[in-house]
Length: 170
Image (cartoon, rainbow, N blue to C red):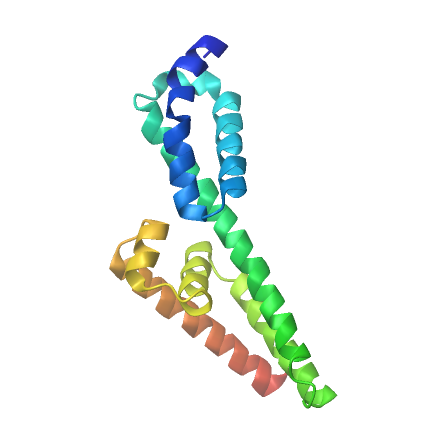
């Protein structure tokens, strides 16, 4: 794909992409960043674009994925700030209790990081972010049974490993 083809096939959908990103992110600057990244990715992969029949749908998919990535990153940062503020907001908690809480949160974070990708995503979206099952199905493009099975397995794995750590200190 040359510059002319890029301008004819990709640039006409930029307003739709922007509105979609803006709707997902709720922030104009973030949406502009996502659209810029979409165009960069499309341009870098321009050699493979001849096979794509519906350029608009393909660009919308890239926009959706990049927007979701940005939302996940924002929520991770927000959760980390929340964890840090919890210990700060309770000055009457003794240092040893504070250390135990901090260690427990680190253990849970490490255990979640060790889960398979789908299980980690489902567990995070459900138990940390509070999304409904239907919303998780839409976000991860899974059916309801897959979401429930992955959530069950993730919770069990974290619970069993956490029980071992607490029982044996391993």
